Image 1 (cartoon, one colour):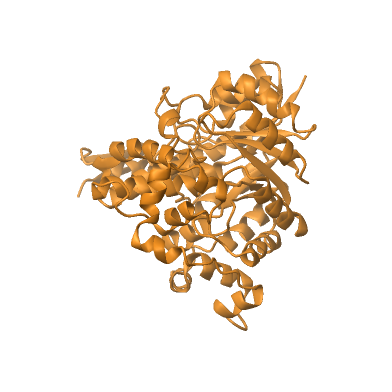
Image 2 (spheres, helix red, strand yellow):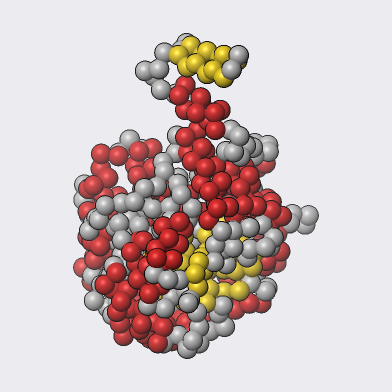
Amino acid sequence: MDEVKFVDTTLRDGHSCLWAKSMRTGMMLPVAAAIDGAGFQAFEIISNTNPKKMVRDLREDPWELLDLIRERMPNTPMRVICGRHVQAFQLTPRAIDELWYERLAAHGVRQARISDSSNTAAGWRAHVGYARRVGIDPVVNLIYSLAPKYSDAYYAQRARQAAALDVLRICLKDPGGLLTPERIRTLVPVILHNTGGKEVELHTHCNTGLGPQCAVEAIKFGIGYINTAIPPLADANSNPSVFNVAMNARALGYRTAIDEEALKAVERHFAAIARAEGLPTGAPSPYDIGPHVHQIPGGMVSNLRHQLASARLEHKLDEVVAEIGRVRMDFGCPIMVTPYAQFVGVQATMNVILGERYQQASDEVIQFALGLWGEEESASMDANVRDRILELPRAKELARWQPPEPTLKEFRNMYGGPGVSDDELLLRYLAGEDQVAAMRAAGPFKQYSPADGQGLVSLIEDLTRRRKIGYIQVQKDAMSLTLKSG
């Protein structure tokens, strides 16, 4: 009888997809030990994009988060997600990429799940080298996408290239939830046949409604590691529920290397947090064919909705989503993963808001058209669209620009000088010195109590937010408490 193993994504992808990356340090700490004791093969904690969000919006220190989590979760490998560049949406000097891995290792990170936006072997190779040099085990993402060029032959070749590297495992990554059970049956055998015996994980999302079924099919066809989240941060745009996948795996006769009983307290805790903070919870999604058209990854949907609502443009969401599909075709069907998904999404939003397609373009989109993000990417674009972008006045300026490659010494001088730690330098580089100062001035992070024993308090807090309730009465034995509206 085979055994299914799990990697936890609750503390990273779960809240990225459902809470727009708004899970705070104090929300994680009360249940960290329970997750650590549940038997996960690893747990994900941050990606390249989290530090900027934490510093600027949450006013929290990502290095402190790593240290506190490491103390409470010593038994489970702490994993981060790394893209082609540390500054995910900007071309990043190599010295900074290398320093990023060095500081991650110093703060207890033991695994890195590495993506290259185009499944390019050279990009994987560089980051595998950075990780190995500091003692971090790399897991290479083989990213799934839909377009004629992403054929079985394409994935066979890329699987061989990934397997040729010094990696712990390979991960079939499906950020858009585009896999179907039928495609799993054809694709997984191709990948496993070409990975030279190296173990493979599955990372998929549930926005089409098919994530749990894909996980089960992947298990049946030989994948032994599944990335899952703990409800209420599972399902919807997030990853499949660990409870659901484990239940179905056992029904098929597999053993499951996870202590589900220990995770029930985690579920109660985050459910209470969601009620108290007014945050959404995940639920199984009905089948939705839309993502197969626009291919927006799960984590980007909640952020797009949040950003449009902040600008009072939420009524434009459907129009932007439709335009994203068209822009992706114009750009040669890049894989919709960070940063290319955001490049496409930003351009589509600009097209909709301005009322004219490609009237303006971001610097990153212009760089994409110039080939600075890769010659393959630029050559794949619709020639007319590329020419229109490169005719913009800003494009003529960027055509003369070369991405800077400062040395580590120059970088230290630019962002601090003597006496400033490398941790501080990286935060200043990623979020800005003023924002880091504001984060420091904000004081300690907010503490949250565990849900166990706080259920009544959470219920009362929830009820007080409901306008139609005139009073709340709690009674037990001789004790009576009445709260009146107003």
